[in-house]
Amino acid sequence: MTKSYASLSGIKSDIEAGKTTVEKLVQGYLTNIAANARLNVFNEVFEHEALARAKEVDTRIENGTAGKLAGMVIAIKDNICYKGHKVSASSKILNNFTSVYSSTIVERLLASDAIIIGRCNCDEFAMGAANETSFFGPVKNYADETRVSGGSSGGSAVAVQANMCQAAIGTDTGGSVRQPASFCGLVGLKPTYGRISRHGIIAYASSFDQVGPITRTVEDAGLLLEVMAGPDEYDSTVAQADVPPFSNEIKAPGKKKIAYLQEALSSPGVDSEIKSTLVTYIDKLRAEGHTVKPIAFDFLEYLVPTYYVLAMAEASSNLSRYDGVHYGYRSPAATDLQSTYKRSRSEGFGKEVKRRIMLGTFVLSAGYYDAYFAKAQKVRRLIREKTDEILREYDFILIPTAPEPAFPIGRQEKDPVITYLSDIFTVQASLTGAPAISLPAGNNSKGLPLGLQLVTKHFEEQELLNFSKYFLEL
Image 1: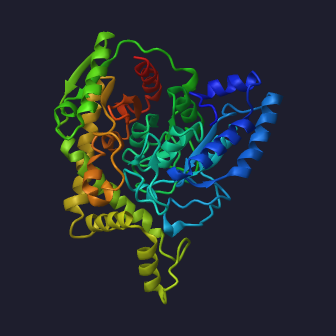
Image 2: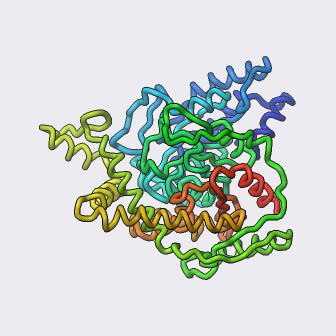
Image 3: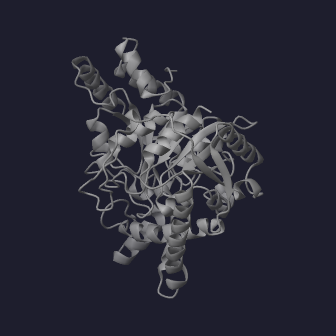
């Protein structure tokens, strides 16, 4: 078992002291990956390539020409394109498809001398909250292998949790970076929508999808954000805002005003130990002199249905490109154009993806568009306005990341609606585009990790990182 480092700074210190090399780090991670193959974390490991690149980075470190991520070994979610490498979104319909270009974030990570060790298992097309919808089977939680890893970036989270890499990159549509980070005891950051380019990310719901890092420390999350963020000519939705040197600017915050949702403590659907953990941190913050007050969020019951109406509608549109004609899986039983479409999509997509495509197509249909999709767009605007109103008065909103710790594998299949409701605390930031971060908050009585979440104003990631580092030291 290779040494587990809290952050890249510790790795760089050991490299500088001659205690390790990037090549030795990669070899150690590869050993851990092989030893924990039962967790089903990786869809593919880039073993030879990672070792060869490690030698190159070691040479650059010796020459003093290495990039700011030299020594950082990362894994990427299997919906992020990497030229010359397979990318499947963990779906049969894209199995064995090789990307012909790299996503903007992959190019930026490589340019800073990060080493990509493999592509991680995820929910099929990022649709799920448990990493159980993958064509390649579920990812198991390292803390308890009978439990889910969280979704959809569960593979990315467990890769870090089980010390198979230093950090991992996921995508967050309705909480898919934050919730698995919570289930695995890690830091999971969803930046402001548009902060990071989506070019080369296989789309699920385009007005929600956002790339985010999963790390052990706030410092590493800030560093990866700093490298990946910024304008991109290939993505018209990316913000043109300047990118601060996040990792260099993390400092102690002053006294802050924090709101917490009173429903998080009053709802019977929230686990009792999560409630008590939230209360503990509220008390700590108050003892430190911060203003912490309860607020009611009038639209809480509309968050999940609004998110799923809109996300499924966008999914049905985005996934129409997988038709057995252009690329990906084509049914061998197809005999004409119509059977090519029908059979390829029926055989290539999994149950959950087909469910969401059908629901999305329904809410976009002529007879129901105004009743569902148009109404959901209006409610989304109300949710955004209410959230902005709260954040004009308070610096942060403090809420649980999920209403419960990691749940047993198999529950999603029995009742998908219960799994949809597990997004209750993460979709607010997704609907509004606000930045949010999940922070580890200890373990429950069964040893399962718990997470709390901070949400703040658009493009205030620096303040979010500052306060997050302070929060973890309480």
